Length: 90
Image (cartoon, rainbow, N blue to C red; front, top):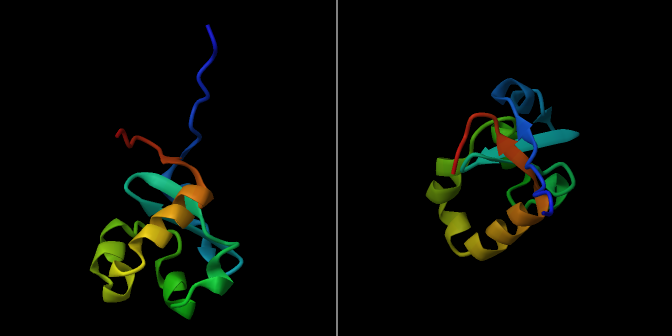
């Protein structure tokens, strides 16, 4: 039987350390994303940096500018997913 790959897990403390423009990780829905490569292209400029190393699950839903771009955002997050938050089960 084929071995199912295990998704990498990250602690909240580890995610919190990735909190600057050169190294931005975010959490959304228990998943961890490395947005470092996308940061300079983000239309909101430095707004993303405010949430670096944090959970943006509710922030994304409550920013009016995100409502029209949610399909793009979800696609970009799938592309930049690096694992899940430790202890989070879907």
